[in-house]
Image 1 (cartoon, one colour):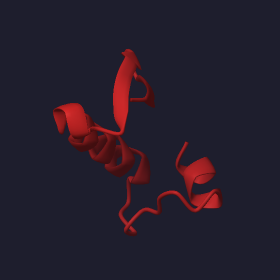
Image 2 (cartoon, helix red, strand yellow; image 1 turned 90 degrees about the horizontal axis):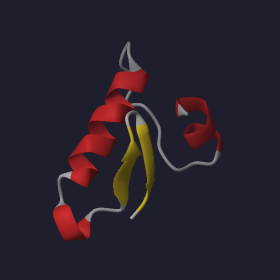
Image 3 (cartoon, one colour; image 1 turned 180 degrees about the horizontal axis):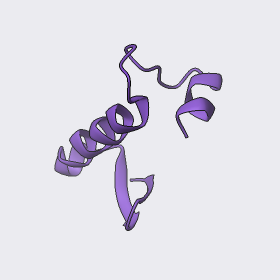
Image 4 (cartoon, helix red, strand yellow; image 1 turned 90 degrees about the vertical axis):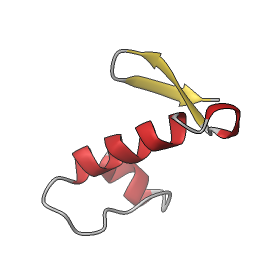
Length: 50
């Protein structure tokens, strides 16, 4: 997912050792925005557009 998002120029890792964990954290922060969230949890470990 990290590679696909970087290729599509949607998100890039800030250069950490665990870009997958950084992306997961960013997704969870977005979901925490409630009605302003761009994503929603679809299944364990799965997300979809809100």
